[in-house]
Image (cartoon, rainbow, N blue to C red):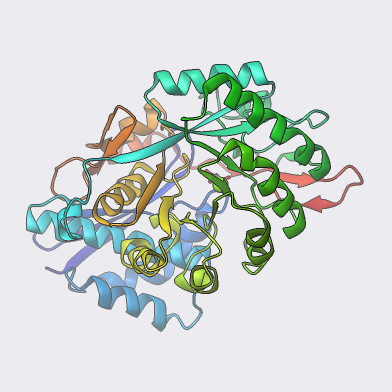
Length: 412
Ligand code: KDG
Ligand code: MG
């Protein structure tokens, strides 16, 4: 079963997506997601210029060997561009293998360990009233676990809260928080950690008073705090029993979590911008986190993320795979198959894609009573309509960035 074609498809139905499509000499095709929000074309070039020529003629069954070959033969290892490119090849090969076996991919990964995947959605509001409405909307859509992001008095725009500018720039398609904006330069947002730290606990108190103690609540700090600030936040949120507190400190310094951990029992999640097991080595071994946030798409695919999660399982650390709208339906499907099969599944992030995206990517997953299931079609269960994809050419888009009141650039 040899690879005879490898096509990189770039499309922008509601937002930009990069997909690798592999074709074998016996006519099977496999898809892999290579979308890297705001830096999409770097992965396109990496794939087209350096990876595609190496794939033609290889045995599509040799997934582990292909992974090791692409990773080690480059010499320049790791990094989001490399690991997204390798992930796309890896998932496309798993898709092909599962189609060849006539089975949904999760069967090849060990079979289902559960009946479905608990998923969380993103509620947000500039005020508590708006936020409560958003939580209710999500509950009506079936969500049984909800991430809460709030506006902060004095700040004009903040991660997780859909701003009007974002909506307009996204040509009217409303994602709950989609931060990337089409345009020639990144939007500038403002930030003040002290105001944030004062305000957030009051919001969780209000949410608990309104919705009661049962509802699992999550929150994303988006890498903005120092370790001692993060420790303070974790401590101040303890009365509200969070499912997790995410990305409290910048991802480059995993050791920062040691100080946070010493001060709070609020569960910690990190890793959406990590890309290898080596980013996790210390924090898993020292049990500094509770959830692994990596997406299949940004962590070298199923082959590598499964190794991270198997390692994590020895320490009772669970999965919490990244699933914002910049993970394409192909990346989401891969996550669902992996999540269904592993023992240490925790929760899956799930934002809905827009109608145009769903017309480009035909999907077989189900969403029932707050639970996802990848479906039982052979492979990962996603088809890409190339003609439909061709209707939406790439558009330059950037994630925003932050400046403090004195003009200093801050983590976004
Ligand atoms: O591309 C960046 C987004 O994926 C990220 O900001 C989303 O933090 C995020 C999350 O938890 O979904
Ligand atoms: Mg996040």
